[in-house]
Length: 262
Length: 342
Image 1 (cartoon, rainbow over the protein chains, first blue to last red):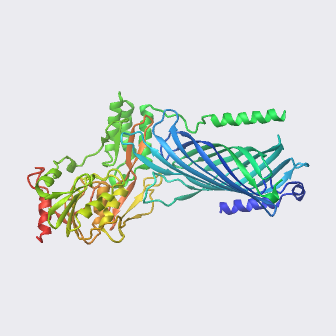
Image 2: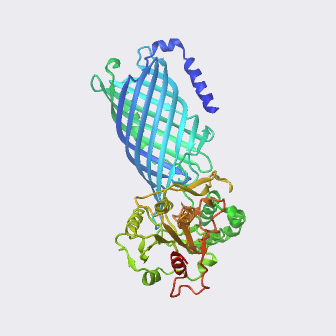
Image 3: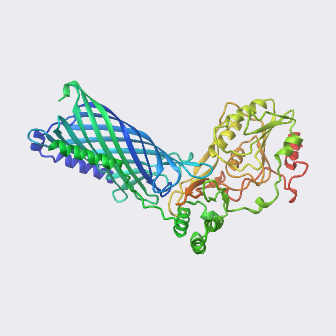
């Protein structure tokens, strides 16, 4: 019911955008393109299903993305993943190996732009999937390990702004999960119980958001270089609360379709 | 001006990225806080309060003052261990520090009796030929007679060595009957144990079920999840198997007994298994001590709780009093009678 309500609300917002604003705005801040980025990410996690300690680690991160203009709407897809070796903060014990991945799908509609098209602003809907598998190594003499999962799928509003400056474009994207589906096993994952135990979470039990700011500049007619910083946080409250904060700094390239290059 | 703002913004982002955000409050390592942590986590995690008929609130009320008043880490560990021992669960242990031995919190009366099994007696007196330990380092393999093979599995610790069972069965391929000796096997890796057991079936068979604790209330459990024995490995043995068990067969070894008992070609001989079935998970206290708690309840195929009851054999060979091991292995003697049609 919540999902249906959120989707309807978003569609109403999109339909209500003033035509005058649309007439002045660019179709999309990003042209039809594909992009690949490589960078480093920092992962902070505290999952009470494992213990009450915060673990932190950095690792390489690979991101892939694509953008397209579809009938005046901007469709953007983004996927990233990485492996992290996490150590405890604050004198905790044990260590963790985390494999995580994230996929985002944005459907944005331009709603405003400056007269010279230097600044643009779009709103829309975002669907996100965050998947994380953790292998926790305990600090006991047996070096025993347990496996845990924390997977979240969310939808919520998305915002996209860009501003042309310094010979390129500064951009910012933000989204907030309003309704989520969570797979967070109560105890360590078991081979007998491999299927997700999904629970619906609303803003009262799952709060978070993600944002990205970056700068991109054309390197040639079809190639654009991008530098971006992305941060996302989740706070999930149930009998086993979990906190996750991911930060990522990436550098990459975007290949633009010739006919739509601007 | 614009360039300066941009650079300031970039610097702020980098500073944010390099910071150590705080997601949880620092751990309190007082005895009171750690006692509360252990009690609370056990309350949230342990699966068998109802099976063991334990009132955990009362247990906490009794032991908390003793824990708070402890004068040393050793005394504190003793109190925690005593509290956990009220659960009467062999899978519940406390390891007070890296490198320390786990403190066994519970021993049943049968655990205190002298051992009724001696693997060296079998090797000295019964085995006519043995396979080199270099081929199957996790198994003892040999012949009891020209047609009866023997495989002993001391434990299911570790993983990835189930292929040794193929090598063992290769060497025993002319055997028409097989003795699979699980006596005194304390268990280990659940998946490994079932991979080993899968060498004795050519079709999948359900053999039990588990319900996993999945919520804060003591009766929060998943629906029953069926346990299935699936064929594994390149070598199968489908002749008559005599499965030897005793009171010191625990945990994953009991899963093997439970699974193999569903097979028509398997006859269990000896004594009932120990009845420790909870699948433990490890948890940590704020000072790095670890403890283990059972997280599921296991049931036989006819819905009886395995914990404490164990798996009964088809052919019971009673212990010879409290004398421990004699010059003969009574269970193996009975099996040899059975193999010769007795």
